Length: 349
Length: 255
Image 1: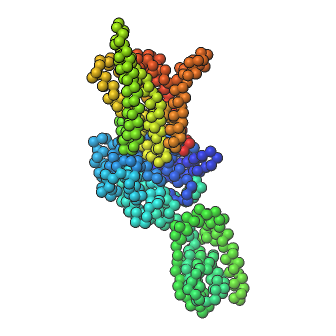
Image 2 (image 1 turned 180 degrees about the horizontal axis):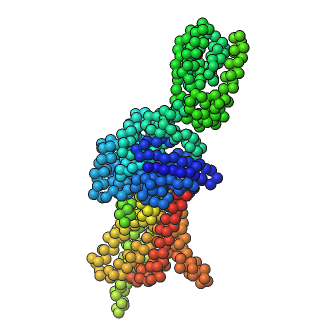
Image 3 (image 1 turned 90 degrees about the vertical axis):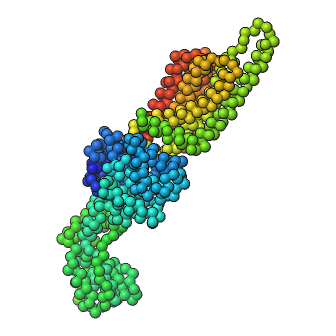
């Protein structure tokens, strides 16, 4: 449905979008995730034909955005970051105007307006002046505006930005309800949004596409290693040494536990066997094991990992999913653990 | 065509749902009413004097009332058209609604023409108000309606030129005040250009007086259509709209 190849956009010396390529299939909900200024809005604006790309191609439903802008615009419903509303108009009149502007035959316009009003739960404010509406309602009018001509593709730029939690849930439900008949691209810098609504996530940072996968796969891929939460009653220094000594453990981080117990986040290679070894180690030393459970990386962490610049993180990114790769790909992280492992081994001996 | 009309209608709607239309029309009614009143007052005084002198030719309503009143019309336009045009694009760019227009399946020229037409419709309302005044003449006298019609054609052309140039300036900024001020300065300059021509007969002086906007209306106000005057206004309209289109196109590159 949407195909983007080598898209680049420069504003003078700054590159807002740098060689991005992706495809979106019909009916998919794809989330653009990235910090502010990452190039999400620019990418969307190019797709909608609002901005021309510097390099590369983008097409919607088979029509190139530069060569056939009108065909593309007919098929796209676009909600920019600030909904494009005329504050002096009534909701109904505004939607009527947009409907005509989008090329709906005059006779069908009232019918379409009624149907989007219902869809976006705007029926009771239809004769209100847009300028008098609350932010949540304006956002919904913005959505109604994007939907009115029944576009194949919906492009929503931060659809829940600035809304209160209840309104966020409403808008998300609405987006979810739309997913059947429209292909949707939405952008956000809030993570739960993507994991809640999107079937695929594109992580964009500094104009580059950093990752593209389902929320689940992305988590798994970054995991390459498992993380364990271990709650132990024992002397902190000894516990750390002992845990680090377990073969397969790559990193041990102390967390806040219930004193006098200590809690640890233990990163290990992707092998369930290690869990039992960790447990055995703790028990064999005679410490009390209160809790041991696997923890998955939340998207939030992935996002931070993907978009922060630490070298270790970049190496983690290179890592392939699967247990066997962890040894090589994470060598940068492994080294300190091994060091500690050796020294602890020496101490124990 | 349908798109142009859709945009023009919305534009007119916005004028009338904000105070702008009412303020512009009210100010126009006062100013035009005063010009009309003073022309009539002078006419009454002169015709009283003429009645004293036997053998004097009868005074002509067109020449003494219609022509000076319409001739002064330009001064009102100078003041009021920047108020009409300054928001045309500046407001859309500030509020972000330009993004709606530019991502809708319409051509750039349809957006420009639609907005200009919307402004022209408000201007037509001003002309209608002025006709209310002039129609009094038909009750008390028999002015030549054909000459008056030509005068109004001239007014439409002159107003169209003002509005097209104002629309262009409005595409250059997202600040309405800036757009309004620059527009007013440009119009004032175009207005006073023929002062240079009046005492300077060099080539520059002649160019200045040809570029000035007011002298081209003189023949129209007398009821005469001169080709060069019509061409002047039509090319000003075309230039204004064309530059607006270019400017809107460049928005995509500048944004």
